[in-house]
Length: 155
Image: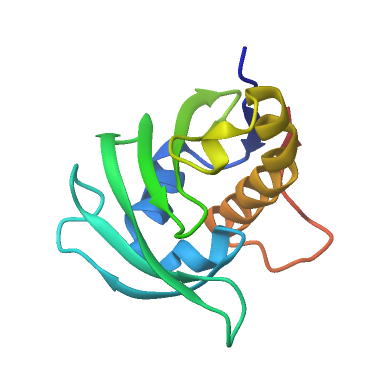
């Protein structure tokens, strides 16, 4: 069974959704994303894309992430490509809980070569990255400026 990273933030799911709905914040919370080159009109409607670069200069890869499913303030499912490594599906779910938002993120490879890696190894490999993505997303949503404040944390 796949294991998601779960993070609790002090703000509402509406506020977290607002951050995700601004495609230009993508490289601020997605670990590995270097920059956004364009955001399709209508983002995050199904079929829209963020056109981004991944990696470090000068070895940047230009690719895109597409919305597969969007339920505002509840769920966002993305299909992220990173040639030549393949593609991944990223599922982000939101639940109002205890005056804040619990965010769940699950990522798995859906194409070769990364899809050849067993699920348990994929989960282990992406867990630290996804934890940091959710921590960054929470910080942006909370507009934290005090480095000691942080977010509520991993569940």
